Image (cartoon, rainbow, N blue to C red):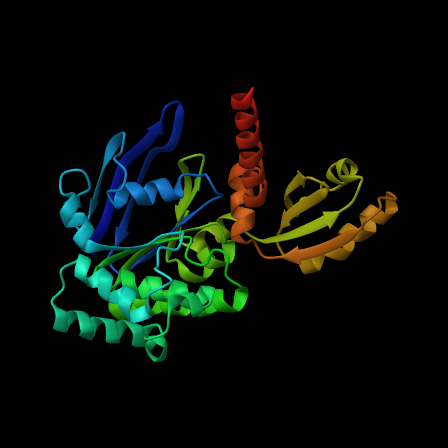
Length: 328
């Protein structure tokens, strides 16, 4: 297999903050690779370094064999980027936005026209090519940005939170285009996301990143299989007692999380009635019971002790406190 991206011990620090902490991974050509984690985990900083927009503090990385510090121009020619924040000119048409981008890459006029037509067809915007971008929906703008990022024939595409702020239907629609780019065009895609379903549906492999460190790296299925079995979640105000009562040999693990008890076991359907009977015998109130197979949310919780939403809340609170301290 051809290695498209190689990262070794990559680190980025800002003053006393380590945004990316000695991360290493390889991505093969045509692979969809996800960086999954909460906001502020280091995902975008990692992309910025690989795209030569920020210099690493230490470490080494190559994109299509080109060193990100020694051959910045070579890297930039090999990659396309779709930023988290929109960068289209709303007062131009779809075709004019594409044409302007093509001129920046010095594509000859005939090749530029041909590529614009091909890519607008690919993302199903050809019939809107002469409409102003300000008339486009959020999903249409995202598709146009992806088309624009592919204009100069990059072999690697960076997508930073590609479906952020989109409704579920539009998000599913965009996933189809991203999967097509990988399977039919053999384009290597590295995307950042904090949507568990997006990472699960799209990515061949996922690196879970938290506080700038990769804490797990594997295929979505292997990560979920690592949790194993089934998970029964019980909501009860008396969760401490539940943890003491549930001691059967068929229970792999009992976790307490907020007002929930999470029971890891195999063949949940076989044992759930026994669990409810046992809790009833001890007069433990039960608000709700649910059974599910492990998800990436469960994987993240197993590695960090918190859900991805809780991690984001913690970071927002920390930033709020830091801002408050600065003001005083």
